Length: 193
Image 1 (spheres, rainbow, N blue to C red):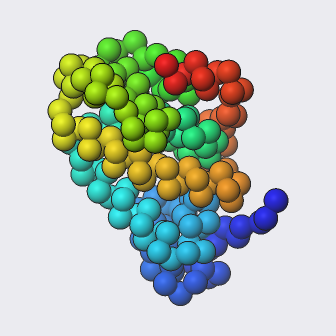
Image 2: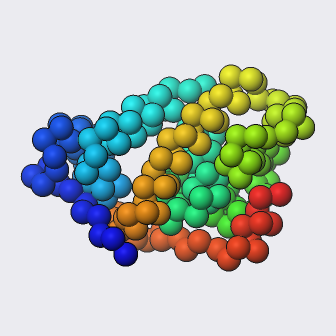
């Protein structure tokens, strides 16, 4: 394994230091994800810009977390699954919804399930979803703008999922209580349906 450093404001490249200061101010700590991305200032800047853009989409906070968790599940990102489970709890997203997302299982709310299914399809099909996938998503009450909002969420999460998977970013103490292990390949294939 090639070790990646989790930077602090003191050890980060100069261009990353003000970005880490922003993260510290926003979250009250610098998550290991940001410290890892700080190795490449452009990567950290891209993450922060994409995250801000995704937060401004027309999806609700619950819907945004569904997209982020569904993407993280499909990409088997243990770090992001734990982190977004904590964030979902802070946002008062129902525990049954979060539990289903963590297990790769259908969500009981049909509209949220359509969102989970569509986000998963975008990831697993690498954006080459079928017209039927899009029609089912639209039929659930979403719009063409929401299709693009989902793609924005998948984009930001793919960046962080891939970075965490390659760097094997250690889980922050704040997320330890919601640690998650990637399921076996069979479970992943079932969740993709």
